[in-house]
Image (tube, rainbow, N blue to C red):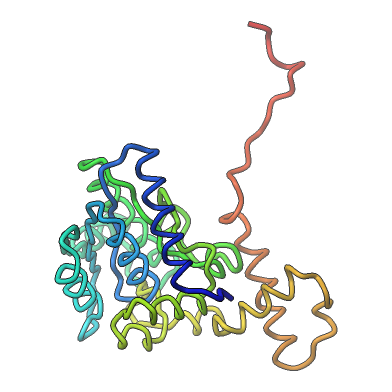
Length: 264
């Protein structure tokens, strides 16, 4: 866990400035979900004073009182370098459903499709403006249990908060006065029409999974030694880590031996 949130904020903002100068990009583009991760990341981007395009990309979103609009209003009123757009991608999504003749809207493939449609939209605007697409995943999601869509919300140029656990994200969000309603909201990826929570899908809370990740990384205690709920959490963590490992490592490349290559 971080011990100085102000210093961490300064470090991330400076890292972003250094990276964008190095790549000679003109600004940042980010998708705003109304969750704490994208809210925090967008504020950190805005603090760089480089142009930020915040995109709201609903797909058949029937939730009321969306926090994404509240946060975008907060961003645009607080930072002159932030612009926003809202693009409803529902017709794009439903057109695809018609093409593949899919009637079951609760499949994992379609949940991931929503994330990939959003990724394509982010990159469209990024390419138009020479901006960087910014990811919003935290450490436990990106490197612990792989709780993201490959080539969806995992398809980004940079990941400013990917070395912060969810608990760290909460601490920094409080420091930066992210809307309290967002800070208190239960995490959801927003990809399911029944609005299921992350905890429903993971079968554990982020705090529990962070604990399991720490124990696993330290390799101090074999998980078989734990009993009850702790044993269950370790099993969940190790199962998800193994299952989603393909998302968290470089794409495998078949390396051709030199003896099979002709000399040029």
